[in-house]
Length: 113
Image (cartoon, rainbow, N blue to C red; front, top):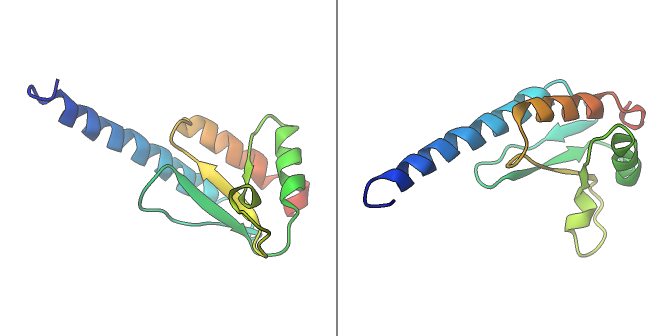
């Protein structure tokens, strides 16, 4: 597999796949309201988005879940409470179409208006 160059081909294809998913997330995030700002990442399969005001993460997650979209609150990744609220977006195993749909749901949530 490696001697014949298949591993290098696989890595190249996976980089293209994950870049397309990350680009889809970045493109879709441009439609989000000003209350949420997606951060850029240069590695990994997750990136945070921060709320610009105190938004109830649990309410955002609940409203999205009611519409079939699973979100991860930033607070879930912290050992103790932090003043910043937001979400953590994973894009490694989600298609660009699902990313666009999920961001569309998030964009229209009443709690973010």
